[in-house]
Image: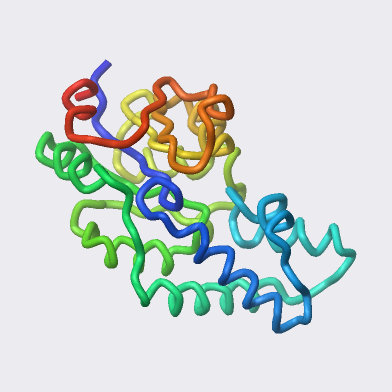
Length: 214
């Protein structure tokens, strides 16, 4: 199979920022006098769009708030936190550079908001490599629904079968599988036992991996 595009999840794949995401949600909810525990963050927010996370969390608490304003405030909080510096994962830049040299189209498909994605790519000095960003505010249904990945393929002008997805989380891998795409799981945030939907599981991305795929 000839692969013409690579679609990257962002948090946990390109950038090691889950701690910043959690802190941004915690700061936002603190203004409402709602303490967010680490356990609740994992249960209600990880791997979801901000909208879905807030909806699920408030349903569990039987509370109602203006979610759109909270999403906007969470984005402001995140960008302030990220401005202090973000960390990319080892091998990511080399992998992306090698893919770009082979003419592979690149896109980000993330549950984060578009402004956050732009800030991350700029902070990692990767903006020029990515043709498209499909963010949480671009989709109706977040992962594990395949909508985001299918939109990414369409935006790049390729078929799902011509795409490789890079993911770190089970919900993202389920989305890639439902979209009919080849997937690679990176062991950045989850154990291999949780990533069985991936076609390949790797410790980290590298230029050598591009040689094996493209």
